[in-house]
Length: 89
Ligand SMILES: [Zn+2]
Ligand SMILES: [Zn+2]
Ligand SMILES: [Zn+2]
Image (cartoon, rainbow, N blue to C red; front, side, top):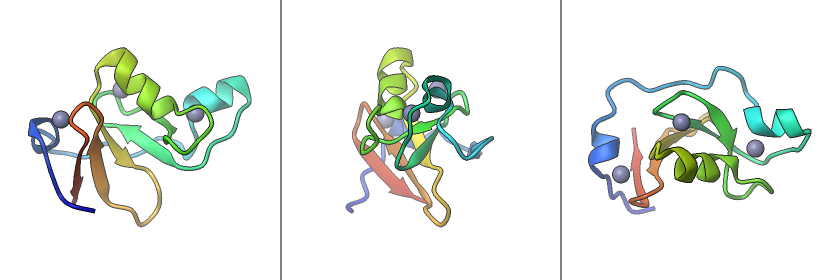
């Protein structure tokens, strides 16, 4: 994947880690998910765009929180929804 960072990603100094390894919104509605992303603005963990409910993406649109980090073990990258920017760390 090409590396194309943005000002949102560059502004992140300390990474927010997932509080629990689950999508907080899927848990509420009893749905399931594929992969998890942690919002770097509020620290909430939600499901990825390959999951049926795409909660991380919906959260970014609804709140304007731009950047998520992968919450998958062994994955070390950040993604900015509005800029479609990506960076490994
Ligand atoms: Zn950005
Ligand atoms: Zn979800
Ligand atoms: Zn958020």
